[in-house]
Image 1 (cartoon, rainbow, N blue to C red):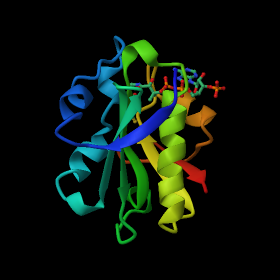
Image 2 (cartoon, helix red, strand yellow; image 1 turned 90 degrees about the vertical axis):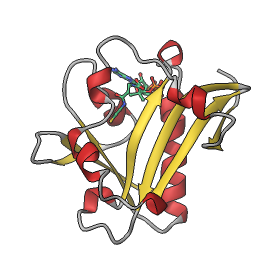
Image 3 (cartoon, rainbow, N blue to C red; image 1 turned 90 degrees about the horizontal axis):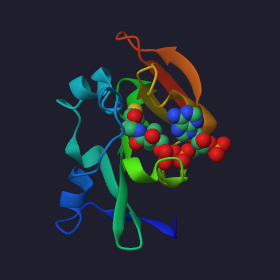
Length: 150
Ligand SMILES: CC(C)(COP(=O)(O)OP(=O)(O)OC[C@H]1O[C@@H](n2cnc3c(N)ncnc32)[C@H](O)[C@@H]1OP(=O)(O)O)[C@@H](O)C(=O)NCCC(=O)NCCS
C-alpha cells in the first residue's frame, strides 16, 4: 500500500468508486437498515462522500454525515458507509478512512464519531472495535451503535 489520500467524489472517480468489489458474504453488511431508511430524509448537504485513492487507483469509498441538528445522536457525526476493495482489505485502508473522517469531525467541533453496523459473521464488527469504537447501544433493528470519542 502506497501513500493513501482522499479525493472528493467527482466525474473522474465515480465509476471506479461505484465498481468497488466486496468479498463473498459482505454484501448484506454494506448498508445497515437504519441508514437505508434514514437516507430518505437526510439532507444531501450534510453528506461527506470521499474516494480513497492509492496512487492512481481507487481502493475504497467512505461517506461521512455531519449534521449537528440531527434528532438522533447517532446520525450527527457518523460514518454512513465505508467500503474497501476486496483485494486490498486487511492492509490499513479502512483504518486510514476512519482516521480521516474522525479528523474532519474534530475540525467541525464534534467530540464523538458514531457508526451503525449489523452484527454477524463476515461483518465489520471486529474492524470497528479494532479502530477504537465501543458499542453504546442498539437500534430498533438490532444493529449495534458504536462510538469513538474524539
Ligand atoms: C470493514 C472494512 C471497511 C475494513 O477495511 P480494511 O481496510 O480491510 O481494514 P484495515 O486493514 O484498515 O483493518 C484495521 C484493523 O481492523 C482489523 N480488522 C479488519 N477487518 C477485520 C475482520 N474482519 N476481523 C478481525 N479484524 C479485522 C485489522 O486486523 C486491523 O487491526 P490492527 O489495527 O490491529 O492491525 C472492509 O472489510 C470492507 O469494506 N468490508 C465490506 C463493507 C462493510 O462491511 N462496510 C461496513 C458497513 S457499516
